[in-house]
Length: 380
Ligand code: SAM
Image 1 (cartoon, rainbow, N blue to C red):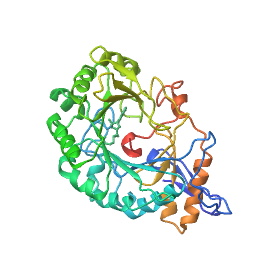
Image 2: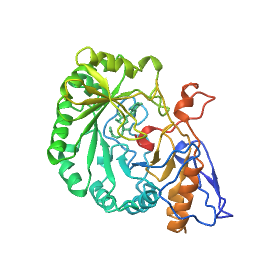
Image 3: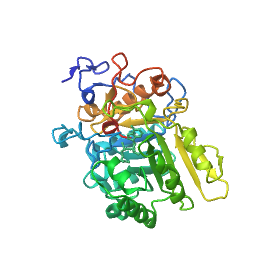
Image 4: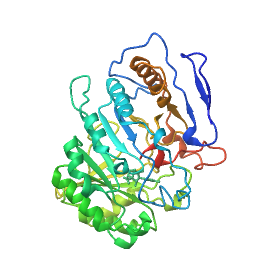
């Protein structure tokens, strides 16, 4: 339950309560309503460029580091259909975000390919244009289970690229990690079909858990080297409150690079865009590149230009934020585009956080620290 004071449309807020999915503030709008300039900056001078949209909180995998089956079981209360933003609502918000400078949209979840008719949403988003008339960079992160079936429709709808999560090549290790007995071969087939239809360059994300799948680092590097796909290793993160995260299960990215470099010479590359999450390395022999995402050992918020829209329309300014801003309440209330746009501007301009850098000083989800929302809800 949330208590909302709507007595003044310029100043209204919600009191947060225990279920973090319902913990949100109703955004403020200040008058006069400013027109979007495409150049929104937060209080640390970070622009808004990248919007990640979670289109479902459901997933067909039960990876223990993300949606452990003990928590996300048959009794878990996923969001009802009526709580989800509709495609029209998502597109309306996307248009407003684009006017504020967003150039890239990533659809995620949960598993985004479980959202019925996702290609219709992609088609709607693909028609939007930036203030300078450019098409958006639309991409999607998936576990690959349904990719072979959907790749062509996604491409036809206007999806440009895709990132596929794959935590190893050893079938037994992978089946254990996804915890639904899903075979590696089917994900590899999905990757192959996606590349064939032109969803490229494709990225492959591997979450590394020391003692669980770190022996898969070199085989994965060997497999994707020279394939055109960019393999990225993600440090196992202390996101959410259900995965029982422990620091001793994190393998620092520096060691990932060292292990690969024992077999294939690597050299560092410059970032391709400001705010890029991965540090890039290329194979000296020209057979491609890898990326490492060091969200635990080298957390850096200095140029973070990402915002996240949860499945039910809450705007989060960080994966580690414990509270979102309830844009759905505005969408479903008597508010104009100008008012919602002003609320988005107000939220971003007030952004000062650097949770990722600060969290290294706090025990995850400790009694003292703020509780964290789950990745499957906020969108990875
Ligand atoms: N279902 C889609 C997928 O599997 O790619 C999209 C959502 S998933 C939450 C997005 C990404 O977050 C995946 O690459 C997943 O491996 C990663 N992820 C989830 N929990 C994580 C954690 N605790 N640490 C690091 N990465 C994590």
